Structure formats: C-alpha cells, structure tokens
Length: 534
Figure 1 (cartoon, rainbow, N blue to C red):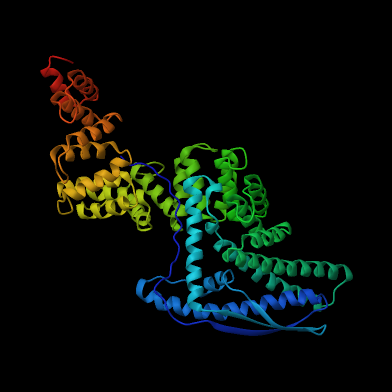
Figure 2 (figure 1 turned 90 degrees about the vertical axis):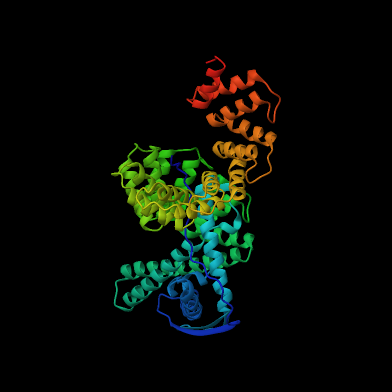
C-alpha cells in the first residue's frame, strides 16, 4: 500500500571542487548626464545603480567561467545573468570617488572579491533557500525555522527585475522630459521620474540589507528591511515578515509576520502570497482559514509560483478550503511538477498510480516518481522501488528495487528499511546477508514499524544474523503484537505456550492466539483448535 507523504523540496544548483583564483579588484567609472528633472540625489542614485550593474556584470563573467569549468565534470551550470543577480547579495560595492557639477555626475567604484569565494557563497545561499522551503512545507511551523534558512534568492531576482525596469523607465521619462511639454504633463512626468528613482534607492537599500543578513548582522539587516518595507518595497516586506517568523534581529512575532506578508502579497508579490497562504493554512499568527489559504495560493499559483501550485493541488485533493476536485489537484500538481517541484512530482505519481483525477497509468506514475526520487524524495524512492519489485509500469527488476529502497532507507524511511531488510534476508536483488537484514530491521523496528519488529523478533529467535536471544524475540514480538500485527500475536502466543524467553503461561498464549485468530491468522486458529478452543 502506498502511503502519501508530502515533503517540499526545491532543487538547488550546487558547486564544488573549485580552488582557483584569488581576490581581484574590479573598478568601473560611470558618467551620468543629468536631466532638468534630476537633483544631485537622483543623479547619484542612477549613477550608482549603473556602475553597480557594470561591476557585477564583470564579476559575474569571471564567476561564470568557473561554473563552466565545473560543469564539464558534473553537467551543472548556472547562467551568467543569474550569477550576476545573486552576486549582489554576497558582495559590497565601495565608492572610490564621486563628482557633481550640477549637470554631470561621475561615480567611480570598486568590488573586491575572489570569484571562487563568491561561487561558494552562491552555493550556500541556494542551499539555504532550498532548506527554508523544505522546512516551511514539511514542518508546518514557520516559527521554528532557522535564520540561515531565510530564503533570499527569489527576492534578489525580483529586486534585479525592479532595478532594470526602473532604469528603463527613467530613460524613457528622461527622453519625454527633453521634449516640449505642458506644465501639467511636465509635473506628471517629473513625479513619475522621481518615483522610479526612489525605486532605485529602495533596491539599493534592500541589497544592503541582504549583505548584512549574509554576514550574520541580523540587527542591521532587520532595520534596513524595515526602512524599505515601510516605503512599500515588496521583497523587503516579505523578508521582514520572514525575520519576524524566525526571530532574526527581532523577537519572534507571528502576527507582525502576517502583517508584512499581507503588505507584500497585496502588491502582487508571489512569494509573499504563497507564504500568506501557508500561515492561513497553518493558523500561524492568524486564525486558521483554509479558504483564505486557497485564495492566496491561487494568487501565487496564477503567477507560476511552483510551491503555491503544489499547495493548491493539495487543497483540491483534500477538499480543504475548496470543494474536493481530483482533476484540479492533478492540474496544479502537473503545473508544479513540470517546473521541477519534487513534492508535486511525487504527488502526481500518486494520482496516476491510484487513478485519481486521471486515468490510471502506472508508466506515468513511474515517470514522475523517478523525477522526484532523483531529487531525493524518500517516499518517491520507496514507491519507485515498489514499482520495480512488482513490475508495475516498468520491467520487474529487484536490483533496482533494492537500489531505490536503499536510498530511501538511508534517509530514515521505515517502510524502505523494512523492505530492504527483507531483501537482504531472502537474497532478492542483492547477495543474502543476514547481518544486513538484522541491521535494517532494527532501524525500522526502532521507529515502531510492526512488520520489522516481527521480523527482527524472528531473527533473534532463530539466531540469524545475530546471537539467538529468546528474550529479545519476545520483546520485539510484544511490541508488534500490541500494534495489532497478527503474525507477532501468534508468535508471542507460541513463546508463552513453550515458555521461551518468558515464563510459560497458557492463558496468555491463548489470549494472543485469539487476538491473531480474530484477524484470520491460520497458525493461531490451528493452535486454538488443537487445544479444543476457539
């Protein structure tokens, strides 16, 4: 029987094995020709953003060359534009000189950085972003995530988009202002121009907050996020909310987190819409409201946010906050799965395997479980192992079954540990190894898995893979029997009847045999018949 588990994993690109270069200095000078709408402050803001773009572009090119070197060995490669975007969060621009004569602003600045160190920082940032999303979906307790897992990748990406848009809009407005305009239209254009310059200033403030955050300076990061958030910067509002959630730079306050998530969500910021949906679904800082959760998930899902698409599919599958609709569940799982969302891939596999919301298709189940399994989803690995073991949707292959159960077992999934123990005990898909069988049975048994407890008891009783120990056998049989495992109940009855590992007690033997017989266990029924009992 397949068991649904809903983990949330976001695959991150990682880099390793690079030990090149040393600190380098990148210097750029930018000259900005001011318009009549510019003041010294606006001219400086524009010049600063332009020189930063040039510096980050050059740094990004050098970092990208290291990525290409590594990708030749493992196939992983991050785009140069993405590197440039994320580098803003791990580097600091130092202004060397600036001049303003009322018409022209000249700004000279530098970045000092080791491309290899930047690469390591990007890897750490991406990994932290992945963990935050895992924890948020898995635990359902936003207040318990750790500071190092505050996700910033998508926020930096959004900030970069806003900067690019603002600079393009400034150029357009500047051109319009140079043309003849009525006083009224000129005032309108100047107001719009100032608004875009303010956006640049906010983005710069936001990136400074990110740098402080990455350096572990939570207090200053919090203050800068708050300053930008109060002025309407959506990514800052979102991360400010997250800092309230995790208690970074400020005391944990779930209600304030909701407040800032709401602010960012109302501006259409998809990550905030998704997290606002989460807090409504979980009742964290706000009264639990499944309909509101669905509302915000839909907002973010409509913008293509994979986490929200997955969560929306989950709400449709369960009928929480919305009428149950398996076809809609499949629709949204598919949307998220096609973006590489591992938990959506896993759940989509479940829908295909069960034929819920879609015609049953074992091959499609295998396809999507394979995708999720390769991203490390333990339950998908276990289910994929089942498909290989049963030859369902794929050619029967016990070695592949063992392979995937091993993967899941190593992540602590009790079902996989129990099955892996069985494969070692029987020599199916792997060389027979009773010690390994005992090892994996023990792992699963300690997690309360009744089948493994029963099998472990048998190993102790027979002295297979472990020294014979009837008392240990009784102990494990009892644990499983108390969970209702019929085989264990029968075995425990045998131990009481024979006085092995426990004092002989016919009444207790009958007690456990009756328990087992009531579940249809043939051996227990035979034992009772032999005693002229039922």
